[in-house]
Image 1: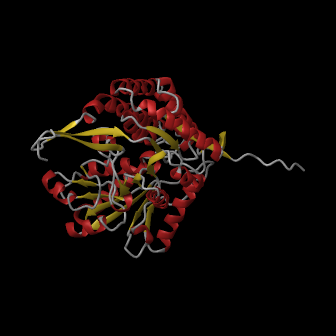
Image 2: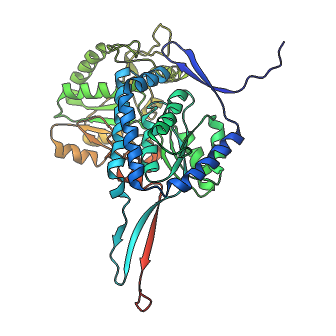
Image 3: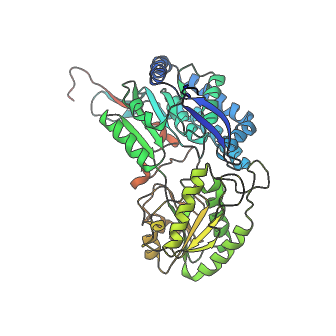
Length: 467
């Protein structure tokens, strides 16, 4: 019998057939420390590189991603199971984000004059150092891009700890940056386990942390960062409401809700998870929703006619199934689905649930899978009570033909982002982030760029002038 101990590794597993595709050896603490040292050295040079030169590299990243969008999309589909067309769409969004910061960073980071009674004053926006980025698997390229594009363009360096089930995507992003001409060490991928993140946060050369993930992970990382007096930004998921007003176009509302909820296998922090429908149109909405569900095509995510692929992992599928079963045991109605599909892979039936009450766990939980929950309300006050009955506050939607009325309702929802007549979406120029236990801080737009810069005041005055 051999006494050889196998080196710990990260496995890339295809959720369509549960086959191991590739393995990556975990990095030792010594190697991680060495890579952070290298990133710190790279930062000292990168911060002095002109914004124009940084922008050229970001534009090159955008060009590379567009040129390789099919290959990148297939890699994301292979590792986490999203439908190929959606994976390619994700890559296109990434390219747009890189271009956005390349086009706008010089303006966003320009000195800002301040009015003072004597002399001059201005704000200078300066990078702070090496940023630790901890990202999830559900949008393997977009999540990396959302943090890296802004903070690297601002002059920071970055080390990435990606989710352990998308290691090939993680390595590909570093490879793309190198191909785009980014100096070695400015962006570095780390293959480490989740339990090893806190020691990385404690490294004095890490100056700030950005994380997208679960609430427990966010709390842990935020605590570790706070102990070191380091800034953090957190995006911790959501259970987004989708309020359908009495005057809504029901067919359009159904189409928007179902497509939004089933996109990416239902594994989207901002997908419309809780559909809250006016009682007068509830039955019509439910009937049309069932018709829409009948059109969902579950299958191989690489196939062009598939609209719903597997969940990201077997554990993910089993976790969602457990939530559905518990809801049924507590009295909820499983209108459609609710079971595993009898085939190899992390598949789950698209599921429609009604009759959910505050006495059930599902009333408050986030469900990260192809599960739509539909509620009925009598008054706007009741709709808002349901909408706000969660500890999350990320995105949300209000659907109705009277836009002014919809905006009034939107103002009363406790959330970081609300869309009118559209499922919560993303665009480079729109800040992304939440409130309550969905986290804090913003990504994208100018707000995302300024999260990890030192906003330095510089004040000049003549020696003979009063302050």
